[in-house]
Length: 154
Image (cartoon, rainbow, N blue to C red; front, side, top):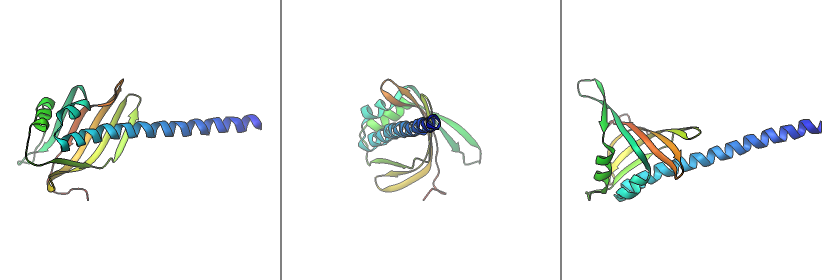
């Protein structure tokens, strides 16, 4: 009986530890993404670049006026330059972490968003992030998004 009880305690204790470790990884992933958005708000290209892995890729899934859907390839260096160049208004992308999946050093995040220039609403959509865990922490390796003006999350 004591062996069975000890085994149950070990199993439940291990599962609790795994849940705690998983939550800690989720917090670290959220922190990387939040740092990216804080860098956008501040116009800080150095902070922004610190959240990206070398070789990061950007895509957008876009609806064209004729009703077709296209994959647009974006240049991460152009985005970093845009953020770091003085501009009017604050780029304020407000996200909700809807789903985070982790498998070892790979994470996937689904995050609905609304984008504002200062406090003026511009558009909404979903950001999907892929991150990898490096010696320096979680880094974003891929971002794909959608953009629209209507049917936005509340």
